[in-house]
Length: 105
Image (tube, rainbow, N blue to C red; front, top):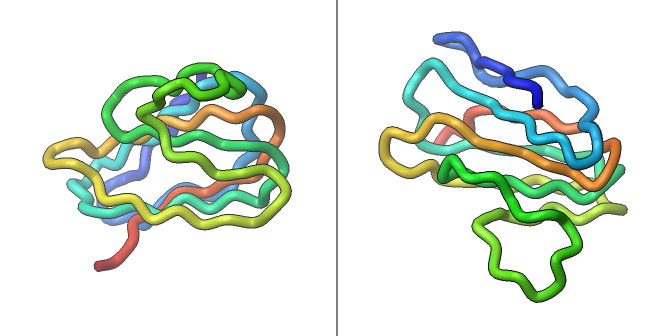
């Protein structure tokens, strides 16, 4: 598990490569309303905003609190954060290059 912190006044974190099944936590020091997650599509990525960790990728038909970013295509996910939650969690099926930044509304 790796934790990244976005310092006060900063926009986001630089791109990094995920590790399969490892949960990464990104916390914004500032209170933010919306975030944007960008993935190169190298692997499937799941994103949660409620403090929980996504169930294992590949749990066919299972209910999930996570937003899905599919493998094989560059994708951008814009997510509104819930009141007072300034942390998101990511888990992937393999190596994907991702970045997270505030989204200006």
